[in-house]
Image (cartoon, rainbow, N blue to C red; front, side, top):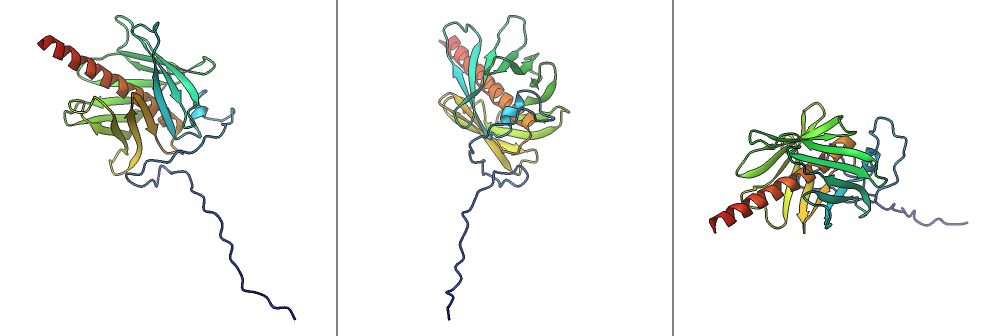
Amino acid sequence: MSSKGPDIEVSKPLQDDPPSYSVIAPFAPPDSYPPNAPSPEIMGIQSGLELLLQINQLTVREKYTTSQGWGRSFDVLNNASQRIFQAEQKVVCCGPAYDVTITDNGGMQVMQLLEDCGCSCTREVEIQCPPAHPIGSVKLHWNNMVTHLSVMNASQEVVLLILGPSFQTSIFGNSTFEVKSRDEQHVVGVMRMESGNYVVSFPLDLDVTIKATLLGAAMYLDNLILSKKEYVGRKARSRN
């Protein structure tokens, strides 16, 4: 007669699911997950943006060359530190206040960031994909106490907010800006300026057009801070 030993329950290894935009907890930026190769035939996704499907972190790194003149050049890296986009800012006399062309590694234009007017009444950049087809925009709200930008979709509806230290006090050195839900109740991402690079974190399941708009927001924020630094520098020199 055989006897049976006690049943032994074998525990299964726990698996962490990617963060969800709808349930992400306050003050909990998403973790980094290695991206999978996206399918090239994704219905409803603008050409080029399918690279953002399995990404929840981007790094914008400026490139310095002796031939770039007044313009600026950037590499956009995924969370595996692989370059997925390149960006070129064009500075033309009497041209747009802000004009950036973003291309993939094959040189095909994927996005354009365009601000027609830099007047003091309003500052807003439009994100287009492909060119002349708006997918979102980012508007700066003047506030001496905090930095406040609205992230809007193609219908000009506010979907996210970017809040951080004021340009008046914290534009030199590293700084952190929170990406919040439009009711400001949840932190759904972070923009960190680290050693001149911008690291943008957001939920993995965020709509790709909003991911693209956040990329545009990071680059636009960098340009606004640079403009403020140059203004402060000119003002300091004029006193001497």
